[in-house]
Image 1 (cartoon, rainbow, N blue to C red):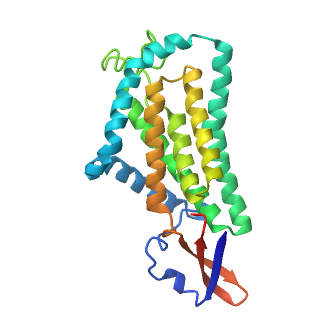
Image 2 (cartoon, helix red, strand yellow):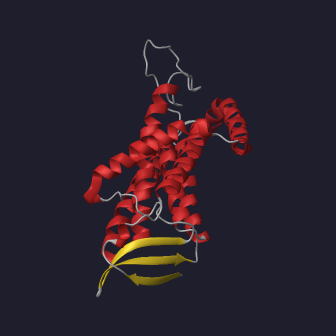
Image 3 (cartoon, rainbow, N blue to C red):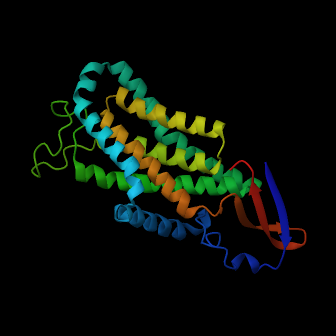
Length: 271
């Protein structure tokens, strides 16, 4: 439930300093702003290891250990899974639909619906989720070429890193999983913006389904999906934290009213 109060003031008030709420918005009418946001995000994400705090090791260490175990288990997992072309085609379709088509379609549809209904929260969610997915895609491509790992259907099927050195680079782009990074970035933004159990269940179930499907389709090893999922989740959180115009449960936005332009102050009890 949202409690909304209207403060009728001059058209200049929305330009006053209100912390993050005054930052330029990424909209279809201001794509240059979107590009700047993405570049700023990429810089901040790449530089984030330099800002590591002691408490961050509470998740970094378990993540590192889990990745190590996954790497050791990868080849065995693929051998146990076996080859079934029908199954692989089925889960390839599932992962493509859930990891690429649905998130981007949801962001696009959400933007136009929000524009039509003047729903600021929905529009912000659509924009931030799209930004997060673009950030994830750019970072993913750089990591893939740097890690240069063969996927389960290449080479001897063990997922070798830099199998031939620099002679035939790039030999593989298995780590991290792009689909996993993409859908988890999307899911984290949506789940944070609409902080309800139902929303979280839907978007995180989608992300989990896509992640598992990439393994069942023999497109990625378990460790590829694990790394992609964690990185995607972190990217979604980074974008939502740095780009959301909401401060806690409060949000501010410019509105049109019968008496002129004004500022809408909203309180979201569900957050």
